[in-house]
Amino acid sequence: LVFVALSSLLFAQEAYFPMPVSRVLVTGNSYFSEQAVLALVTLNAQAGKRILASELQEDKELLYSSGYFSEVSANWQNSSVGLVVLYSVRENPVLESIVLSGNISLKENYLIHNLQMTVGQPLNYKMLEQDLKRIARIYKDAGYELSRPSDAYLDQLTGILYIKIEETRVGRISFKGNDKARTILLQREVEAVNGDVFNSNKIRDDRNRLLRTGLFANVSTPKLSISPTPGEVDIGFDVEERKTHQLNFGYGVSSREQFGFAKLTLLNFFEWGETITIRAQNGYELGKQKQTYLFRYYTPWIIGQRR
Image 1 (tube, rainbow, N blue to C red):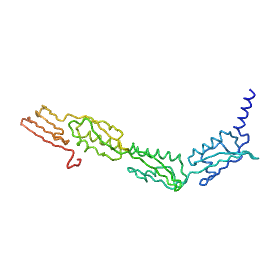
Image 2 (image 1 turned 30 degrees about the horizontal axis):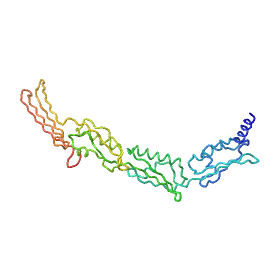
Image 3 (image 1 turned 45 degrees about the vertical axis):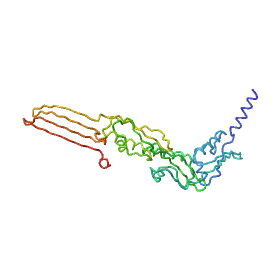
């Protein structure tokens, strides 16, 4: 029991500084003033306050977590007027410029304008991490959900920060379920091609165009799969074809007229996505015989261009 009591007393003496803090000093700083360093975070060590050894360690971690320093140490010494706390820091290199590579879809100036890092100040690794996430979010908001920063490197000698962005590209585009509609008909409605940067907004528009052709009762959302080619993603659409031909009959009677009609609709008759409508109507209006005929040919494409 005596041994345990003495051990507890010794631990308490090691963990607790009996003298209050008289002064807090910072060394190793060149860009930031001592006051600026101490203002970055709220430290436990303050003049007139008694602190624990664990709180001194906590201050060290707080200064390091500010992101401006690559090294931080905390020391202390007793003086006649109290405890002197000394923080030694090593500032990160001053950020001279930011250079982006791999960004084909979004301009470099636009991306850099949205960053919080400031050229002319020491690089802040905490801000760098946040800015990399911000770039990924900007790409996602623009529809480039599969593109993001892949690497960041600071040249210690020049102070240039290099950020590499990996933009995922479109690989193979395939269709499943088109037994009657030729694949070329589907391909011409899809604007995305192999090598384009993948953009979910554009792929969604491609799906809508496939639906608007009238050839399909349903077109699935695009199915993505990893392409054998690095940096690419394959896209697949499952389609459900509509009935290609329809024949309708009808008969109508009113106080002024009576008529019968037949309507034939041929969908994709020549296998180029066209619609042919033939309608014949025969009847009487105010006692007079009346016959009407209709022939309509519609194609969504003319000389290789969408109407």
